[in-house]
Length: 291
Ligand SMILES: Cc1cc2nc3c(=O)[nH]c(=O)nc-3n(C[C@H](O)[C@H](O)[C@H](O)COP(=O)(O)OP(=O)(O)OC[C@H]3O[C@@H](n4cnc5c(N)ncnc54)[C@H](O)[C@@H]3O)c2cc1C
Ligand code: FES
Image (cartoon, rainbow, N blue to C red; front, side, top):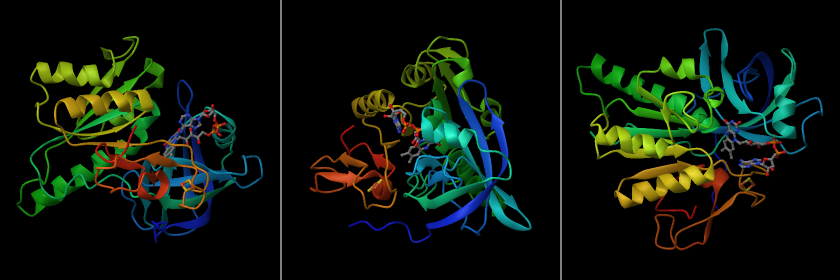
């Protein structure tokens, strides 16, 4: 049995800022009552309000940004799409109120900087699936800066971030993403912002134009139909590909079996027919799971 991560804890956090985004998004910034180890991109936390107004089962959210402070634990920012009772309750929290944080959970992304590899990463984000990529780009930039400071080559080239959404207002926090050190390309289904189409057709167009090489490594997060299209594209082009699954979760720590995903019998996870998204994921190599 895969155990929950050793650095996970249950702690209170104070909501210190809330920003309503256009569309159905909200950014919440919380100050945990305990010091956490620096977080890898795509770890996640189970969150709920502490005043009883959230559903009893907390909901999982990727860490979007971590903001270091000199005089205490880093603040954590979550980017939330409001779709039901749990997300609505979180979006209605007021500054000064308490949230329960359980985490950090999951394994995060595979390392984007080790082993060193010249093949660039292409990050494909669908709507709120952009949340786990902000810190991923920051991690690649930090590794490149560190290498440069010691006179070495960056372990991997700057990534490409292709950010797709239904419409302009569903491209959450676009301005913050545009300030990252990566080539950002936006696609919307209705053409109201950037390329008209989805992230896979955008990637194909950019490759055809020579703006992105043919040989890339892919990491994707977004709705399941998008992830299936990404998997088909990666498989047809024999590209290394990881997907982060936003599965329904009950406990987040491997106990309830609420998050199982079917595994491929000849894949890297072995012959066992399923995996628990919360402790073995949420990111999986597409060779490992059936989408
Ligand atoms: C590892 C992980 C990271 C996540 N990161 C984020 C994040 O950064 N930001 C964010 O906004 N969301 C994220 N999610 C999704 C988020 O957890 C769900 O949107 C949330 O649990 C919905 O709770 P709710 O009570 O508002 O909706 P509910 O009332 O539980 O559900 C409302 C409706 O949406 C459906 N639904 C609920 N969850 C999902 C889902 N995951 N996929 C498809 N349909 C669903 C339900 O079946 C129902 O029809 C993440 C999920 C996982 C597993
Ligand atoms: S959410 Fe309970 S086992 Fe994964």
